Length: 436
Image (cartoon, rainbow, N blue to C red; front, side, top):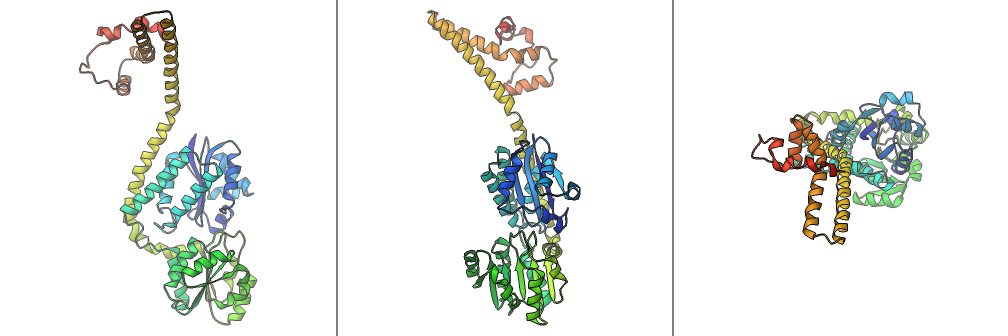
């Protein structure tokens, strides 16, 4: 049983492929339960964002999860396989730590991924698929991310998707001031975009959301107004800039709706940024005249410009990750020793109970307590030392001597002491027959 990662991200697959493997937050618990029901996965969590869909799991082998993923999504395995990657234990630990720190993100060092990982951990916990190993992995990842952000400059001057949206819109209009801006959705990404655009002093900001109360709550923070999604068709023509990022599985803005809005706008251009996966705006919209449509992959080309200035910070972060990953792997190795430790303790407990029962019977017969305790302690010592003593007597020293010395904290001042010259040790073999 080992840790694995199975996933797809912005480096391995285009947007069209990532859309097919995206998991909506509301369906993740159901998907996790379905995955775990097969009996081949012991723990599992799903991280699904605009840039990636990854499954972290503990199993005997990863192929069953790959089969489950394509079956669950009803996809041809041959179509999906070229985009998927699999990481085994050591690679998984390092990868999860890098993801948490924003080192594997489209925008180097972006902080939003940490919140998304915490949401993934929470969903797995609620679904009952988060066990000791994955819980430790997530908590370690959160701790590493905190250390990286507090000790390096990885988060300084990050060029975000929100800032990139503003920059692209300014290439179309020159400046945002005096324009009307529409945000579709009310999540974290939209809030970040609203913060950047509001700083440019647009004439009007409107938030469109399926739940009007949530839209109003966000709009209030920016002195904006809110509308329902149902009002988009009649209001779309009013806006110069449209930024959309929802969790909808179907497009919010179709070709026909945008065409009608363009007829009402005349020759005025329309800037649109679609930050959602799956996409909120039909791809055909990008072919319309006077429409400047950018997807999340388009924005990546803008944010790459700031990567070089953060490479030194990333190198420092990688060093922290390597150290912490090694510590986690050592913890995993100790977990492998748990069955042996349990078996050792069970064996010692059986010896103890057997000797206690024997002593109680002798005391019941009236034997002297001192004699009973002396014999019980001697028998327990002999039984416990029987196996290691026999192993040592049949081995020519070397590593086994060092291991035994370490296990029993032996620090003899006479390293040349021979087994047959020690009266304490030489007396043991005569009673070895009392061992279990």
